[in-house]
View (cartoon, rainbow, N blue to C red):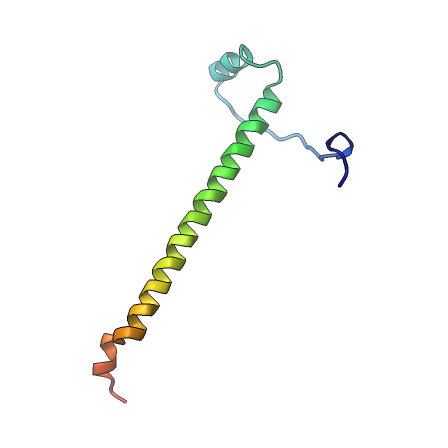
Length: 83
Protein backbone atom coordinates (compact mmCIF):
# COMPACT_ATOMS: atom_id res chain seq x y z
CA UNK A 1 0.00 0.00 0.00
CA UNK A 2 1.43 3.41 -0.93
CA UNK A 3 2.49 5.82 1.77
CA UNK A 4 0.00 8.53 2.66
CA UNK A 5 2.29 11.21 1.23
CA UNK A 6 2.25 9.64 -2.25
CA UNK A 7 -1.53 9.22 -2.47
CA UNK A 8 -3.17 11.86 -4.65
CA UNK A 9 -6.71 12.77 -3.71
CA UNK A 10 -8.67 14.57 -6.39
CA UNK A 11 -10.36 17.71 -5.19
CA UNK A 12 -12.67 20.05 -6.99
CA UNK A 13 -14.05 23.47 -6.30
CA UNK A 14 -17.68 23.66 -5.20
CA UNK A 15 -19.93 26.58 -4.45
CA UNK A 16 -21.36 26.87 -0.97
CA UNK A 17 -23.68 29.51 0.33
CA UNK A 18 -22.80 30.21 3.95
CA UNK A 19 -23.80 32.88 6.40
CA UNK A 20 -21.27 35.70 6.09
CA UNK A 21 -21.05 36.22 9.85
CA UNK A 22 -20.46 32.55 10.46
CA UNK A 23 -17.66 32.45 7.90
CA UNK A 24 -16.04 35.47 9.54
CA UNK A 25 -16.23 33.76 12.94
CA UNK A 26 -14.87 30.49 11.55
CA UNK A 27 -11.91 32.28 10.00
CA UNK A 28 -10.85 33.39 13.49
CA UNK A 29 -10.37 29.71 14.35
CA UNK A 30 -8.75 28.45 11.16
CA UNK A 31 -6.59 29.77 8.39
CA UNK A 32 -7.83 27.01 6.06
CA UNK A 33 -11.61 27.12 5.92
CA UNK A 34 -11.73 24.53 3.12
CA UNK A 35 -9.84 21.97 5.20
CA UNK A 36 -12.03 22.67 8.23
CA UNK A 37 -15.21 22.25 6.15
CA UNK A 38 -13.86 19.05 4.59
CA UNK A 39 -13.06 17.63 8.03
CA UNK A 40 -16.58 18.45 9.26
CA UNK A 41 -18.11 17.00 6.10
CA UNK A 42 -16.13 13.77 6.51
CA UNK A 43 -17.45 13.45 10.07
CA UNK A 44 -21.01 14.20 8.93
CA UNK A 45 -20.90 11.61 6.15
CA UNK A 46 -19.52 8.99 8.56
CA UNK A 47 -22.25 9.80 11.08
CA UNK A 48 -24.97 9.52 8.42
CA UNK A 49 -23.52 6.24 7.13
CA UNK A 50 -23.51 4.84 10.66
CA UNK A 51 -27.10 6.00 11.24
CA UNK A 52 -28.22 4.33 7.99
CA UNK A 53 -26.39 1.12 8.94
CA UNK A 54 -28.02 1.18 12.38
CA UNK A 55 -31.51 1.64 10.88
CA UNK A 56 -30.84 -1.19 8.42
CA UNK A 57 -29.71 -3.48 11.25
CA UNK A 58 -32.86 -2.62 13.23
CA UNK A 59 -35.01 -3.38 10.19
CA UNK A 60 -33.18 -6.66 9.59
CA UNK A 61 -33.68 -7.66 13.25
CA UNK A 62 -37.37 -6.77 13.12
CA UNK A 63 -37.76 -8.77 9.92
CA UNK A 64 -36.01 -11.82 11.41
CA UNK A 65 -38.16 -11.55 14.54
CA UNK A 66 -41.34 -11.28 12.49
CA UNK A 67 -40.30 -14.28 10.36
CA UNK A 68 -39.69 -16.28 13.55
CA UNK A 69 -43.18 -15.38 14.79
CA UNK A 70 -44.64 -16.36 11.43
CA UNK A 71 -42.86 -19.74 11.54
CA UNK A 72 -43.95 -20.36 15.14
CA UNK A 73 -47.59 -19.24 14.92
CA UNK A 74 -48.33 -18.79 11.27
CA UNK A 75 -50.21 -15.90 9.76
CA UNK A 76 -53.64 -14.70 10.85
CA UNK A 77 -54.78 -14.75 7.21
CA UNK A 78 -54.18 -18.51 7.03
CA UNK A 79 -57.55 -18.99 8.81
CA UNK A 80 -59.32 -16.76 6.33
CA UNK A 81 -58.09 -18.13 3.02
CA UNK A 82 -60.74 -18.37 0.28
CA UNK A 83 -58.79 -21.00 -1.62
